[in-house]
Length: 303
Ligand code: NAP
Image (cartoon, rainbow, N blue to C red; front, side, top):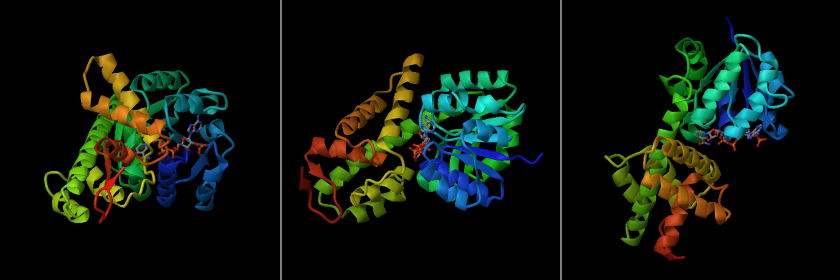
């Protein structure tokens, strides 16, 4: 069966992912709450629907990439939502990062409507979305994963079926612990390098290829030393992910002290009006503790 694709949520991630599906030759119908974000996709050949329900009526596979749990509930279960017009046998693939528990409840509602669901949250940043190199973590039935695989391959490189409904979201929460605790380490390392009088670019070149190398170090530390806070992933969304991590850890009785600390740093940045900056702005919270700023070729600047 030739699948027709619907795509809901054309933000930093969804815009790049939908563009890659068009490049791969799929018929794609898109909808975004704010119409301005639709234009580049329409120019690249996407059909445009009036709402999420109309996307569902036009497609056999509906991909969703919106912000948070209530947003996914709204576009699937709310007024003019996917469930109103979904066809029997259609598949919803949710690429947003949301609660594993709510994911299971949404999958049950779709099943009752005769449709399928996979949770398929992604990692790899705006760069991965644009280049089609995302890591995708999937929860759901094996047969639906096999059905989705060619489409997922147009958007991602490392595609792993980790379990039943909600397991993809659980793996993504694990991913986020690794991302933020690494970023905290990157910030502390750069502060010491700056205070110790090292050339920051040389330092990154020295350590980036060794045991300390990581995606966050190699992609975000160069942005930090240029003081470029443009978001691939915002502080607000990272705060949302850490809330999901800590809620889930609380339900399971697992202590996560480092994640809890970073959650508080992000909260401080939000209170300072920095929620729209990239999540590597975590460094700014550490700079304020140290009373100095990290800057390329600069002696440390007192804050
Ligand atoms: P974004 O640029 O802020 O885009 C969010 C998208 O969700 C926009 O299209 C927005 O529509 C839509 N949306 C939000 N609430 C909605 C609602 N109630 N009804 C309809 N549409 C709604 O965010 P993003 O960075 O693309 O992130 C999207 C998801 O991917 C999030 O769950 C995030 O955690 C996850 N993610 C992001 C990254 C990253 O590096 N950016 C990496 C991995 C995973 P409007 O245009 O109308 O606001």
